[in-house]
Image (cartoon, rainbow, N blue to C red; front, side, top):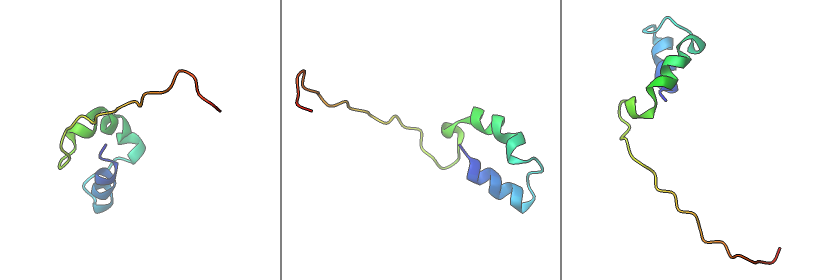
Length: 55
């Protein structure tokens, strides 16, 4: 999400909309459309949990 980028553009006068007005569009773009951020998949590993354990 490019919330910071949008806010910087708004403060410099490039954007006339408020953050709330632009939020649906910003959320629809997602992080992959953000300039400068590589699109990547983050691997998640779940540890093996013992069947019976002490609490």
